[in-house]
Length: 454
Picture 1: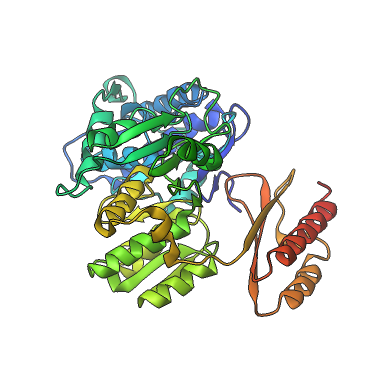
Picture 2 (picture 1 turned 45 degrees about the vertical axis):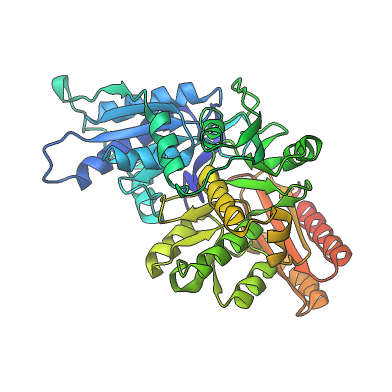
């Protein structure tokens, strides 16, 4: 059983276990210890980048992490608020030994999290996270405390935001501009607020920005990728060509077409995959997605002459599959899009730019491009739980699930899983009859809630 890490780092309510300053300091020490063990034959001192989103608790956790890292004789590079993919970019660009992101992504402000990148810009695999947990709970580091001139120091990187803006603009082909395109941009009062508007404006777009006034407590609150209806309504009111909603740490996006219709990650992937297949740039004509992606995406890929490979939920599992089999494009329905040619992790701004490339090449509005994929009706519901529990430990669950599956037959699928980032069990059902699958999902949720006492 994992003690700290979930599917995307360590998460929890800030200042309660495990998101305490004590654990953050221990994580800092363990990451530094691991970095020093892995670094051999180099004359340069070890360095770890730390970035964060705009949550109030980010200051407290940042200081604790930096203290832990410095206490193990490793230097810290502080970049302040910057999107998660920007921190991956800075980590590799500055040849640092690791990168740490303080963010709970799409969660509310009272939550926070810690995600770790290797020196190559990829999220740590399960094995290395297990080593970090062992270092913390076995107390192996207690006797390893550098002293005097051997402790580390911290420095601030003031131009990190500018470096990342230039990188993003360079992923957009120089033969195109965004002149004449009006974009409604929702930054969710998060880490992209100081980056995304500049990127799209400097490429020529007219940008109507919302969600760009973070106060430490409004991140993701009724805005951003979690609430794209706000952005979509403004697209209709403003007569814009496109709406872009980013999440709190900027690693995913949801968009709206010019009619105000929400377009999710599956539809964006279908559009971008077709464009890449047309240029013979989609490796092995294969798109990597998770078990949550709609059956319609699978059908669309087959129609294009490509195929869809699925992984378990979590963008890092998508990346691991891409690296293992040399694929170059993948993502999640939630809006994580990974273009390995450009970056090592999901990047909302970069994904929006690649979608805009497809729109420019086709010279067609987004509402027409989305017709490449016909989504199957899909219902996703959450059951909030008070404690972690395996599905097979819920009394009568297996029998109940079999009954529902038999009712659904071969005309759909059911996926039920505990969330790795929130205290909920997710119930997803796809099928041809939307009313029927909604009733089935409600029935399963009610059963789980009753049996778990929630």
